[in-house]
Length: 289
Picture 1 (spheres, rainbow, N blue to C red):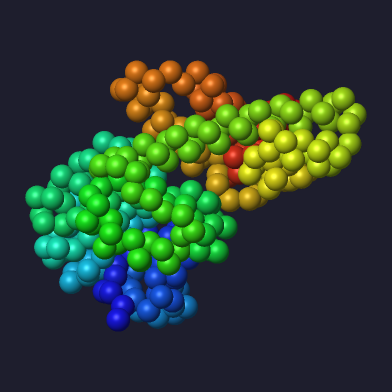
Picture 2: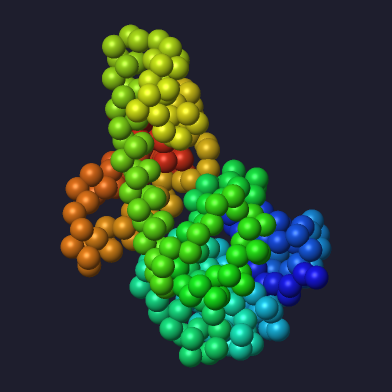
């Protein structure tokens, strides 16, 4: 028998993720800041919509969220008409927003005080991963809460794991974004170098992708990068938001991220070129101006 589930935030990620929960047989109520999007989701997937996060979360066993940033998250959780106002003791809030570790710890503590379990559970895999139900989910929180939520998270993910205590999911997402930033800058320079040298880059990639240089970005983005096509999901604006979180956390912890800081500045140049909504592989555009 399905659970009574609420989903807050129907953006490019949340919309299909909520759909997988409905498909898995759960009774889903959705909330979105733009009500028309919620109505469209209900027309497609069933369930119902609500006018506020509090109304949506009333009597739910599980509440999921995927919104923009720390402030958006606080708004739908502890703000006026936030979900915590109506969530029943023993229910669980699963946050898929990429946000700071600080807000994850803050909401975990607020949930504890209200008798509500809280998991910070950012995702990787982009829009395609969400649409294909193949996301990677990195989770912070308590084992018992995670064990209860894991079967629902499984409906839209290929990999999920509890990493550690509250905040650990967000810290792991930061590690993920730091890796991606460095790999994409290296790949951009490599493709630019090879192209400038007059090499057949399809031939080059066919060889080096079978060795130590191989990466997901190489396999999936090298062709579109060479074509100057940057319409493949995760936008530069979003990446800069994520890298700002990484750099702020590094300042607090004392970690040194010189390459990440540099790539963040490169992305700021991409924004100035008009590439705010280009995907993250657009770093190559700076080299080919």
